Length: 468
Image (cartoon, rainbow, N blue to C red; front, side, top):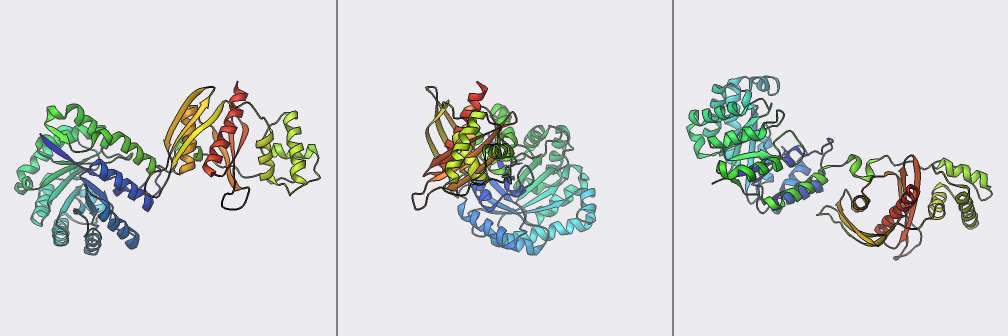
């Protein structure tokens, strides 16, 4: 049974699903996950920022234990030199020379005629082969190329020293039968192709990426380019699922740690998403503190007006409680909007707690995705939530939303120290909006994470009480 190699391009694309660039730390984390998963090749984009990109590649060179580190060479010899130097210490390195072979891309992107492109392929692949032991030639938009020219381009790359050739269906224009004929034709027209690795990059715009890939493997292709992130390229999870179901009949398998794929893919997608829609409390616009005018001489009507300006709708009893607490606080210090909100959170709508915090474990560092495991008691029933997040607080609030099974709009979140010293008490204030009504919760602890979780539960209990 032949083993299909997986060449992952998640980091080569290097952006989140909203187009934001992945950070240095995020790229390191994703690469380590892919390496542990067992992908054969981890691809990186061409060097643009010399200092930062080179440092990233050198860092990955020392970190990767299982995967080959590949980097796109760019279109100049200077870029090839930079790429080769950056991965020179890698356990296994690869340089990718990626050039278009279709008429439309050669003319409008590379501004080159077919004859000039053949010479460029020879020149760059040959130069890269002198700088690195493994060079891959990637034929962009190969499926829309004239077959005779594609054969010349592949032969030129092989003669120049390429040890791998990738055929890209960049425009997602091929049907499986057409793709199979293309690959079969290449093997006939390029005798040296049988001595190197042939791979494919299939795109799923027509929903046929897997079918085209399978047709290529029937002809002898050895590897496929996939992505764990959400792109038009063939999905790693989708392709591996196909091989798990029908690989035995097709005579192919994959070397990935299949049992870890789903969990790892979820971790990578979480890292790659800077904004999560309704999946994270931090997606909502954090409200600005209102510019309210109060003083220690303000009467209850002025305080009631200020409370409304902050967005709260309180009963007369709760307003009276807030006013009494305001007078006590104002006798000791100046009270502004933040102090008044803390008073509202502490005094207004105090209800029997439906959810009580039992325990929490927060893991966060510069080498792992932040995770939170929280256990709460709901009327004698123990409920658990486990989630990753953009940070420890994000992970904690997502875990709490798992427990509750509902997303509430986060209107504001504040943290401040209320005492001094090494054992200072931290106070967290959280405002949740439900059905247009604002509910605030306050939590105090020497652990700011504990304060944040308590503040969320405090606000949540008020919402639950009102719903009941």
